[in-house]
Image (cartoon, rainbow, N blue to C red; front, top):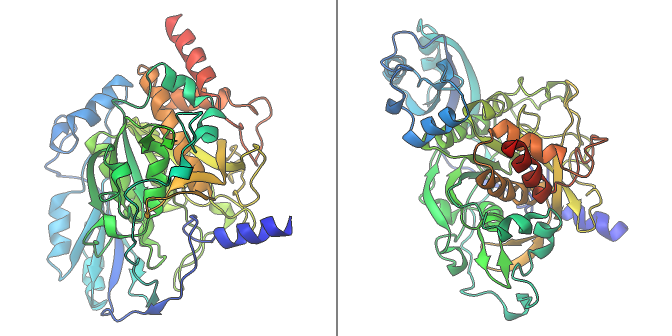
Length: 469
């Protein structure tokens, strides 16, 4: 047991909720700078209209809403460009805007400009979310990668190879057997970097719709950043028979960088929200977010447990809107179960999302997996999947074991895409409820494993039966 605890301690970190090695910070030589979240009062006199949504949403996004009987509302309207121009005229740099929250991210070098911004009639509040840190994590080093998998990683007896258990324990292979491998579904992966995805041949079969970086300043390439996103993506996308088959190998993917791995500040909540809105606008069906926050670098107040209500944290308010736009958010619960915090990390407290905890390969609770409930009494996590350890592909192109709720989430996300492909007339909320109600702890959901381990084949059979009635 003590060896297991040491191993878990090495893997599980606070803050961004993913597994990585601790690195020594280095002195930051960048010029002092600030980013503020400017909340606007309204969207009045906007040139945009709900009657003409194609000006700000893709056809695919609009069709997704129509299919589920969802109407547009004011949160869908972009931030008024007139207000943005007023702010931009005051020696500021606009980093991004959030239409769901009606906010503008503003970068300034001189805080004296802030008073002028506050005096604008369109501005409601200004909140500091980032300042140049004194020290930062060193940039991700270059990583050599393998052109092929090692021969000993092959398992001739099963096409799923090393990923066999993490799919079959959820009965996901039954969906694959009927041809549901995620084809036609679009998944946004929100993460911190996708190192070497463009170079490792095992990823060349993946349908990547595009990439986008929401961090300030943007990276020259998301493929040169950390490999956490590479690991997450591999769980869904691998298509290497007898080595590794992922949970949704025929889905298409948007790779969105919204986690700043070099410091931990509130602005990452804004980056996340803007990335989720982008996923909505291009027509994604699902979002995989293996990210979570509850403490930040010096200068930002940590969250408190009473705030875990799905609406207090900026990121959680945004996450609670995802299902209302007709998408499914699958978010890792967090790796804080062995820390004093113990609870979910934000936005895992969001309403109407699938929060995923981790279990071992014998389906017992992984001690590091964060627990619920939410402050308002909702069961969390919703479901669990293997994450202690999960089988992943790293930025070196190697198949290895790694631990974290970060890797349980994409197992669920990929199979959820396959289930939705099989039941295309279901709404996002209906698909999520099917998954909960066909999990092995549905009779007595708790705050450790939620509704339990899903049975995706049973979810499909019950969903199909209800559709045929």
